[in-house]
Image 1 (tube, rainbow, N blue to C red):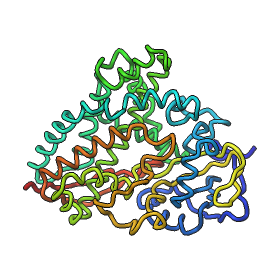
Image 2 (tube, rainbow, N blue to C red):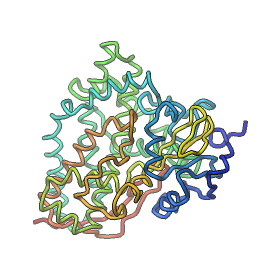
Image 3 (cartoon, helix red, strand yellow):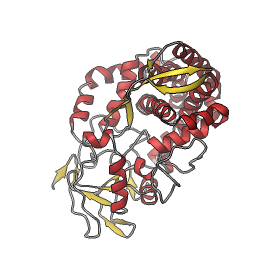
Length: 407
């Protein structure tokens, strides 16, 4: 059996075009727009021989593959590795990398802990934190927006919401970046990220243990489900850790990308400032336009077809969510950022049963930051050149100097 990056190599059917591109090349990860456009132009599915994968970049087919958990499973890994043939670097996520019926059990526990009712009490705390951070930044001539706002806000509110006694900004942010880089090939981004694992993983494990959590946070709700017999104590610990692997770095990315969008489109920011109630649709448009998670994989669990093309069992398929979110067959003027668009159906939070379970919390965080920003800041301006950070699954900024001009 010929294996590439932990999954079976294969030859595509003759009606699937072959494209000699590397979607994990640094230049693609830093500036992926032309890659997305060409991927969509070449057809509903494209074969990439370097990694022996299919890639889907159009909206219709990407949504079909990503949503159909019977034909295209997550339990064989949402990265390049196929868990049927190799051992993953960490125990598979029992929320992200499982399928029904196991997924149904853990999803129920997580969805209850992250329900609108459960997180409603966090709104005032989130607002107070956002106001305090922005008040300080407004007084500065310029600041580094990724570290001092995009990272600072989630790390200030998220661990406290979970009930963590311990907090370490660098480890929390780098843990998410490490998990997402691990979904790609064994390139320099994955190797550099995994080199941090011996320091980060033991700290995360200890910080999410029951005896390091308060009794009034989201983590306590998860451990309460273990007391009720819905999950085991070990499963509860894994679910609490999944808060951090999926809930910090993606929110950091979302805030940074939102600031980049607004600084790049001052007319759109003026609309938000005139009507702060646009914070929610603005956030949804940021997600569509920049897609913090650009790529997730699925594995064909049996022979099937998509768009009339044959797909063999064991085929790894890159679902390029960022490309689907820019598909002109789905969106009018997809390359234009509009705070009033209301892009219902975007795939930044996934789709189907594996849609992001923490999206209520992410929406609350981003809506809070954007609302306070619109109320306090007249203009958002670049104070230097933004720099993007290459990651095998996340499209995030590394540095972005900004200035806030107050009213």
